[in-house]
Length: 346
Image 1: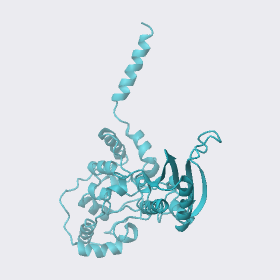
Image 2: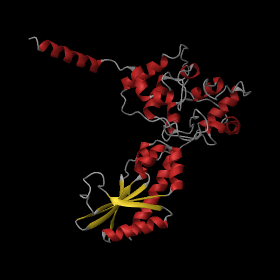
Image 3: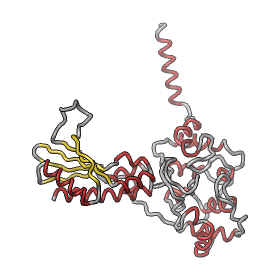
Image 4: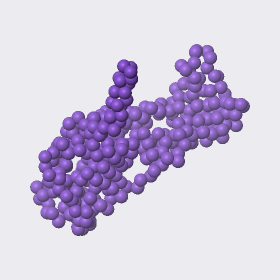
């Protein structure tokens, strides 16, 4: 009797916690604060605790932004958050502004995209990029190079285009955005019709979304070929192929080195390390997380008399980075690995 009461109380506490409403502040701290700041004042990500933003962005815009993210940019998608959790985060954001939310019309803004293109080149391209590709620097680390403390958003991004409406873009251009270099275009001397023309041009941006490149879907995590040669011959072929691609051979070691007691490693499983240091330094400057699979490595394994040569597939790993600049390096590395594996096994 006396032992059951505490257990019942514990079970009641657990059940109550499971059914409690999500805590928006805690969720924001866990998922958002690292980029947007603990109090929404910005960092690598844009400031959120500003009236000029919160007064014009709808809940639907915020939901789509959190759910879809910005493919290839700093903002990741959060597909695993529940609707209730996203709503809780939005409620937390709304607490940073007392200004009444403006209801934006859904109908398109009328304007001349051709004139908007001229105005965009003059007033917008220096920050948002010639074709709306956004400010330089993507990923989620402070150590990478970027042109500004706050990276201007990519306007051609499919996540942005799906989440926003014409009138939200229009109001941003009219009002500006405090805490960022974005000023009021009316104060810069443009007319409301000029602004509408820019809106129409921004809506012409299109960024092709390559699902294989962004998510790694339908791509193998490793590249594997069979070698017609012995393990020893295959390793020597690998060294010659590596040198022929202007990479520096570093070392070979047993695949199990450090994982089993010294001297007990499987001698028929060998890892080959090599590197192009210029490529390495340039990639690390874009995003240090590429160090997860650098320097380059090829593994040669013999099982039941069959020799296989394998490497990681950088294009598959590109989904981890959400970094358009680094994605191109992953594409280049995948091509190099494929060429090396072909040469080694010929």
